[in-house]
Image (cartoon, rainbow, N blue to C red; front, side):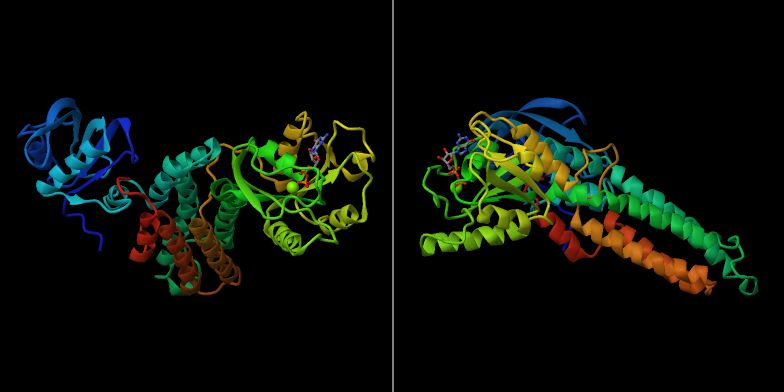
Length: 447
Ligand SMILES: Nc1nc2c(ncn2[C@@H]2O[C@H](COP(=O)(O)OP(=O)(O)O)[C@@H](O)[C@H]2O)c(=O)[nH]1
Ligand SMILES: [Mg+2]
């Protein structure tokens, strides 16, 4: 399925017009294809050369800067030619067509990065990080992806793996001395070493929740009774007049969602219909049902109470039913005179009219979600990696129990090997083709 013996070509820059557009060619005949594009010119490796480019019919179509990277010193590890032409979709498509006439094949999504992985230029964690870096929508997401791309996450895993490898070597050696117990491992040494590896995994997994939230984002639902000021707050948070605001109770009936950047974490904010026991009609009734389901699945809630009106039974019910949730309670309309004391409910005074308290609210949500600010260590963020780390951990727990009770080396070894197998799958030393296909098919063509 993953052939690497042909030469592939694709536009590497995003669709549309731009100052520059890049066509990337990779494979054994990249230099020959480049020659065919430029009436037979030869290119010095790692030098940018201005050249006239010919289209499929042989006519000049553009002047471009051609850069030739020889294997293995290139992105893919193969011979690579990058043609930086003017960013016209027509010109770029003609260059691709010319390259195909010269024998190149159109690349599949992610195929350049797949080749980099198959040729050992990067490991699988790094290949996945390329996709994450390109897809990042907040600076913190980009940072997380770049850490993984630089190999920081891989090296954290390697530290744990090294402990296991050492132990495996000793246990395997002691297999040759059947009568002497764990010959090359001190008494209790095997269980201790496995414990150290489990702690290493736990440290990586402890950062996983934060990593996952940064990578995948989360949902925050705004709930409260009608007219509390939810839609106005929603509009202020997203910085656009998206929701309709009126003094008529029950205006918002459908769920409105919008993406925002909350201290570097991509958040989907949901504005909901006001929760009240007596809906005006069937439409509002349905709106309230939707509001309740949105609130149920949200990672956090903003509970909006009207600070300028006495609290009613609908407010009390909401305060009670959300008490165990990750939430920030807001006393809205803080520009008006207060009808109750927000401190008692740990409510933040917020005015969507004057923006008072908005920054406090943003910080309160992040704090309630318990997402520590990004640290220097690379965090694991990818669900695939988390699952495999957990699998490794489970195998090590079994191995530790076996080692602790003095079970034969073979038993301990088989679980240690299983744990290492999970590490290998993360990094990609041993990964099934269908998994690879799933990882790379979400890339775009040219990456
Ligand atoms: N003075 C003041 N009025 C507000 C504020 N937020 C909302 N309102 C008003 O309260 C009413 C209901 O607001 P809306 O956002 O539609 O509430 P929702 O039903 O909870 O979505 C509208 O007349 C808004 O103009 C605020 O911060 N200060
Ligand atoms: Mg509303």
